[in-house]
Image 1: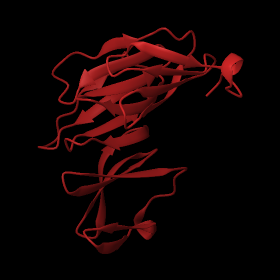
Image 2 (image 1 turned 90 degrees about the horizontal axis):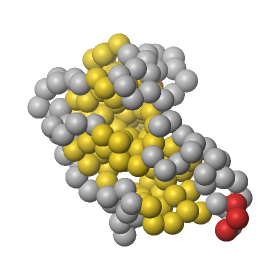
Image 3 (image 1 turned 180 degrees about the vertical axis):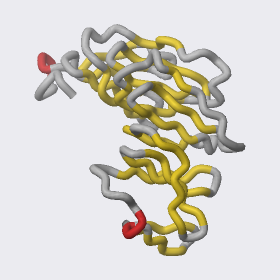
Image 4 (image 1 turned 60 degrees about the horizontal axis):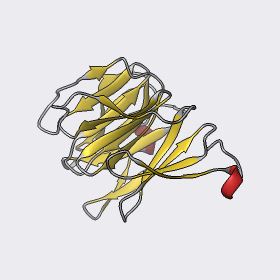
Length: 177
């Protein structure tokens, strides 16, 4: 695997452990590689394992925070050093999305939100779907598309208020997204 960093081609394929998937994010000028066996940091041409975990998703936000999902909940890394917080009450996390100054977390129970520094508690923002929330996508003009596993696509404003539902009855091919 290779990518461009500061106009330089970086090759890391030979250093990656065998894995089903890898996700790369840049945060605070550092390159992070998330795999199912943990978090790695690319530094001076070497891939260094930072953390052992059952990682399922990796996301860097515009504030240079690194957000990670593992099977036990949400882990957070501040850009100023290692400050991890685990939120084990959130199970089955499916997606993360930056919405305004908050991070939305899609789960089987609904959408949870917290501010980017996690100084506010993680709280339930939206739970009107009867099914798990499987995907989140912020649109440029403000609304957020919310995919569900049975209720179609819901369109929410940045405060989590339901604006519209797109489902099979009004054009969606399948209500499971």
